[in-house]
Amino acid sequence: MAEEGPVKKKIDEAWKETVAREKKAREAKEPEEEAEKAGVAPSMEMDFSLFISGLGMQALMGLGEITDPLVKKKEVNLDQAKQTIDILSMLKGKTEGNLTDEESKILDNLLYELRMKYIDKVKGEGK
Image: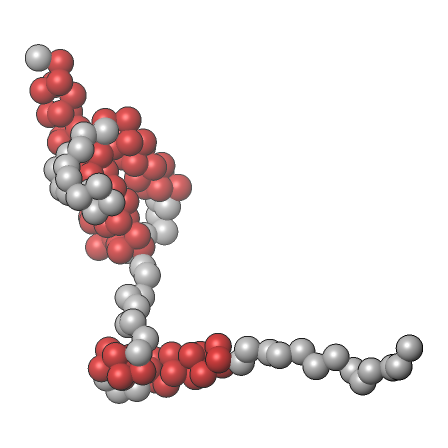
C-alpha cells in the first residue's frame, strides 16, 4: 500500500466574513444603515421592557385581541392567555425590588390590562 500525505480538510471560513460585517455594522455611527449595506439585519437590544412586551403580545394573541402571525388570524385560546398572564405575574414577584420605576409601572399596567381583558373574555364565553 502506498502511503498518502496528510488529509486536507476543507474548512468553510465564510462565517468570519459575516462576523466581521456584523462587527463593522455595530461599530458604525449609523448602525442600521451600515447593517443594511453589509447585508445584516439590524437587531434590537433586548431589555426587560421589551421582553415583557413580547409576553404581553403572546397573551393578547391568546385572548384573540391580535392576529397570530403563524396562522394569520385571531384565535382565542384562554388557557394560553392565562398561562402567559401567570408567567408575567410570577416575573413580577421574582423581580420585586430589582426593577426600575419605569419597568415596574410597565409590568403593573400590562398585568392590569391583560387581567381585565381575560376576565371580559371568560365572562363573554360563559353567556
